[in-house]
Image (cartoon, rainbow, N blue to C red; front, side):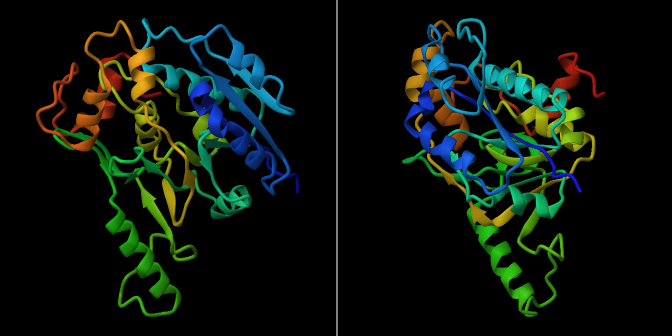
Length: 302
């Protein structure tokens, strides 16, 4: 049987230069052999960082020329991801392994995730850098809740699932049943972090990445909504948390979003971390499904 062909992909920029060598070497050393690695470089410079990345052996490097005065940060990331999605489909890959360039999972990650045979499946990854509260990037739903933010799972829920899964394996679950009896640590979810997510080709063929015209965070929100609408299941392996060496976004936002009015780290911080009286430039959503805005913006379901 022919071995499935995997594309490992992510947007990147000079902001991740501090960890890029580690990420690149980890990807190259994944135990699964039939793989390629692609990055879309987005640094707002004269192309110097793009030229540096082009020197890495076996690395496919494309460049997206971002103009921060004309395109929001998250819209830029959506555009970069869409380039990778199209590359995956057009070049005949069987899977796309989304792996952000600050995320370092184990070297058997591809085999482990492929073995689950799910439309979309990933490992736990946290969002937000210290000292802010780190949340698991796993979602109950596609709702954006006013005064709270995205509909995340919490660490307590995940720990309880893991404890029950361990009891299930020993026959002591007291009536509790997993979502997949073969793999009890897997949890069926609305969405799992795009920063560490193995996706089947059929999903990439029938979804896309587009920037949200109003919401200030989450370049992957519409992708999740499309996948959910088309009944592609999403799963997360709660037994493993991938190392996420994420950084603060404050300098990036301040430096690269100049000319965007009052947009600032304080606005992002307040919205994402639950402040109720944030001066957000965008409409405050009241538990609205992100998907509704896709149709309003003229993007068809098919």
